[in-house]
Structure formats: C-alpha cells, structure tokens
Image 1 (spheres, rainbow, N blue to C red):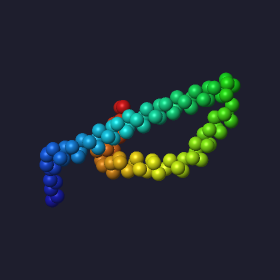
Image 2: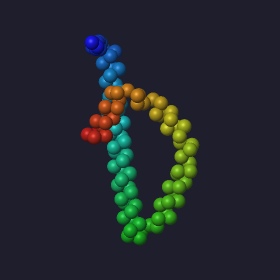
Image 3: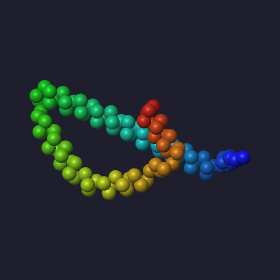
Image 4: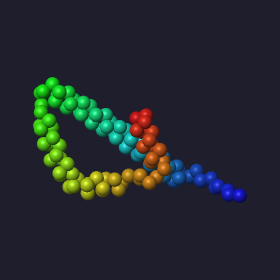
Amino acid sequence: MVSFLLPDLSTTFLVAAIVPLIIGFIVGIIVRSALKIGIALAVLVILLIAVGIISPNQVLTPLLSFVKSGSSLTTYAQRVAGYLPYSSLTFLIGLAIGLLKG
C-alpha cells in the first residue's frame, strides 16, 4: 500500500506554490493579449491590402527584416525565459487559467 504525505502548510510552502501560480496567470494574460493584438493587426493589414491602400510588398519587407534580425533577439528571449518557473505545475496551471480566463 502506498501512502502519500501531505505537505506542510508552512508559509514557505504556500509562497512557493502561490508565486508561480500568480506569475503564470500574468504571463497567460500577456500572451492572450498579444495574440488578440496580433490577430487584430493581421485582419487590419488584410483589409488594407484588399482595399488597395497598401501593397503586400509594403508589409512583407519590414516583416522579413524583422525575421532576419530575430537571431539577435534569441539570447534576450532565452534570458527572460530563464526567469520563468515553467517547470512548475502551479505555473502551468496559472498559465492555463490566464490564457483561458484572462
């Protein structure tokens, strides 16, 4: 028979469980907001191209230059990602809640 030990409900345990939950929730809200803004911008660009106000070349040129400079941004993104406790279950739960409800 396997017995499970309940965790101690000390302040340290509660802080270690709640802080990643809150961080995950905030990151989820930020990601959801960024996706909403990205979709709105894509729809706006498609409408502007369909109406003829801008050409596809005017959109693709800056986008391709941004993608080419993306390799210099990877070190910064890796450094920021190193601060997130993405291996924590409570972080993932907070992230899911932030993405779904935020």
